[in-house]
Image (tube, rainbow, N blue to C red; front, side, top):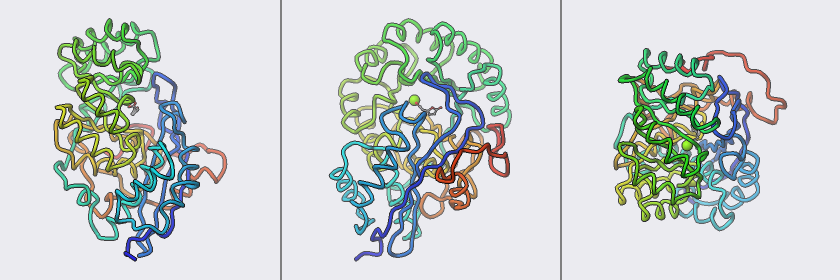
Length: 395
Ligand code: MUC
Ligand code: MG
């Protein structure tokens, strides 16, 4: 038996409020409910993984409850007693035990990789092909729903040199209102920041064709998932037609097979990569390889994870070649408190890769207990040493 034999897998849901409402095309987020998985190896080493959804099952099919169920009922029995160091074999076992459920599988795989890397005293990037980046441009998302507050956040973060890349969430209101909203932010930030938008599937092809050129003219450089996940024909048409703007697939690109189809169809310029939707760190590397082979760029997306999932994402993004457009691993700063002792560092508009064993951060078990759903009602959380009611903390 190898030292890396998986002895036990545990999972729990946390409920952590956000520092402000986060408004997307399909709803308003006021708390995140990440599923935290802990893997214990026979050697005594342990590792953490995470899968976060946005708005329960509103972003896609999985929810915190379905993830917990899949982990406890199907993935845990498939992996306990197996050699944790055989990552691909573990993925195959999970696929045999359970179809789909990419988020659940990603949380388990993440915890296994963290544990095995810690067992060997190595940073996870060393098990994933080696790092090519120490830092990545780091976006903040303006989504308070109040333009004055969005601008105040942006000015503050620019002033403090924490972010110079902003993503604006649109799609909840009339398209003309969204165009005015983005136009005002673009004018106010002109020359000081790069702007992207995320429509989260809200527009039809016709609405997107009508309004996106105005947004590109206003200064938006990256356009994320303007049309429904299934509407690849419209995505492709926009990719061909939009001068000067790059079209990015998010909800449309989950499995490597979807990535292959989009690449073959030349249906977008950029993939938003997310560990959870691709089904883990290894599958994310597969999607990135398809992007590279098809001359498609990549962007490091988030599902608003705590520092556990965000650091894991940073490790895999750090290994990726190809054209990158930065990342948005700002989840920890949107939450009132974190679950690690020290978050990842940010400086000069960039995220700095944490370089200790595993994903390089130390989880605080008291915080896991404190936010554990099993403790009962979600209580209002006092602002303390972690984040404050401003996104500028932990800078
Ligand atoms: C998405 O669709 O990109 C991630 C960050 C954010 O603000 O929303 C999400 C989901
Ligand atoms: Mg998106």
